Length: 491
Image 1: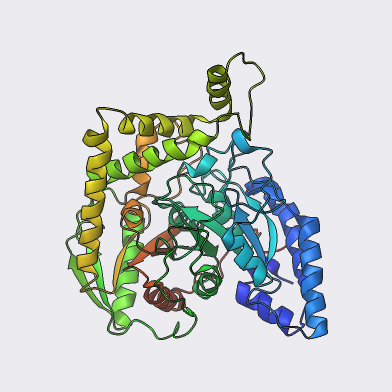
Image 2: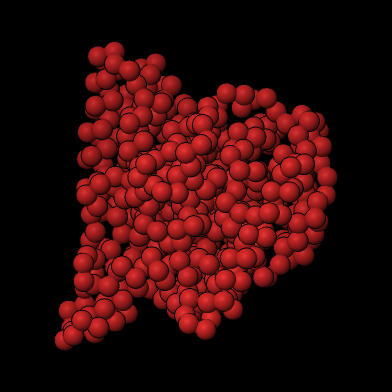
């Protein structure tokens, strides 16, 4: 069984047709994890015994002729900021290193309801703050294509385990590109859904108005199937959208893009963009033209002000959300204190990493008296302007295409001491979160060094079906979804 290259669809069909059992899938996958994981560092917690028990239940359902879920027997890795009942959930932080939630996040409940098998929790940047996965309190994640390089962040573990064949499906969270950027760096498909389409209940919040859970997979078809399972209103989540009907994203997936109007923002393929990425994007645009899409340049300026607005808003919300971690109720507690304020100060000093502290300080400053209007309020006004600008564009165009990242995966340690340089890596992704839009990153080529290149497809609110159809059409042309890092094909 070539578990490393098997897709969700191949696994679930093989199990249903009894070509192999769910137990055989899980055993094969853990054999591969034991071989590959020490080199990659993509997992924080593994659940082999529980996964085998879940697989036995699926196999017994098949023998009894019972109805199976859409993901029956499919192993799933879950980012470690998504709560899992009885499974340690750390946010890759010393603050929560021993935290075991008493409940499942809604997305985890949905996966289990469809007979998916939870195999472990993936490594990440601490509290989802970072673009390289070098901010974990436990270990650095390495890029499977070149282990001297980063996998991207903050969902770097989730992207790396899919790329390395250690899971056919993983869940990530995306606050400003944290699914799409690692998807690009690791050569997999990563989708950030429309804000509110997928429940955030059980996601340990970084920035509540920006965070969104989404899937990372090997293929676009797998991504479509995963979104079908994850979508839908949740009464436990006050930001979950009620008026949008759920869709079957597999229906019409092969319809193509003939007649689609695609906008290419002027200047996006020039200033500050790696030449090899620009060439791969241009080639992909030509493919869309050949497939019958109408491609035009559009005005969509990208400025440092937008990046600043994102980091002010996200840091302000992080400052508020992380205030609960004070050593009083749960999580890490310092041993040396005399008074309550000393307990809180020492606990947070000892348990939070440098990047988390930096963003808490920035957010607290932006929300403080005398600075709220100067920074936070202005950032929110710019956010609304950005959202309106995208709404106008999507009255005319079906999709917007941009690079996912301005650079190829960089070396571990290369930018760790230069936060501004690191933040600039989000230049193409942050506006999507500010505007609450859906966007997908998928592989569109490789550099001369053999590093993956990602292209970003952006749609209007709740147009994930259009994005997936376009992505599927491009994937069929490029034939890149079956490629995994050299030397990692066999168990």
